[in-house]
Length: 170
Image 1 (cartoon, rainbow, N blue to C red):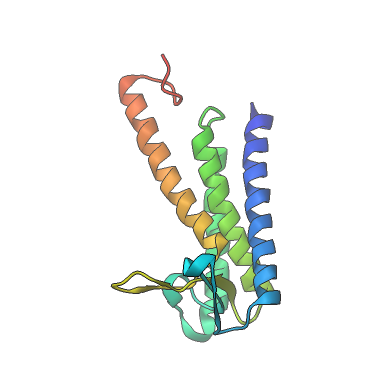
Image 2 (cartoon, one colour; image 1 turned 90 degrees about the vertical axis):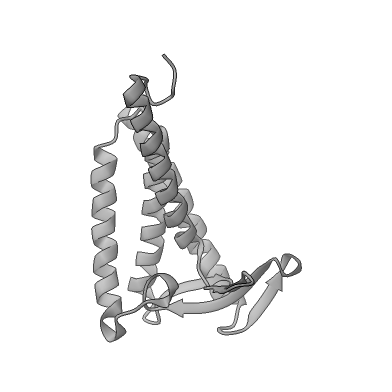
């Protein structure tokens, strides 16, 4: 079971980091900073941007790179602890943790490799009431992984109350 569990985690992690790295490499080679390219009939705007801070451009000035690199390492350690505490039967949790880890690794690599910050290129999106900031695949993986983990934990907690295994069978 540990091999299958590790295999699932590794597959999601490698695929996520690979997609993130390749998409950012494409953006760096094909987009110009500050210029938006409309794709899919304007559905997906692409704008190359560099974020020295965290979500929504929040930053700590010159200390941002060091502080958020350290935060990224701490997040990876926390995800590692959660992974080791997760039973093989909880495959949804493991996949969610792997997505979170892939996103954290993707953005951590950017912080180490690019002095100008994390490479973002998806957006901005006009929501009518606000403009959603520019982001990247790693951000999507962290967000989807976090939501999926919360849902898996809530589902598993419900199954514990009913004395059911994680897959819901008796």
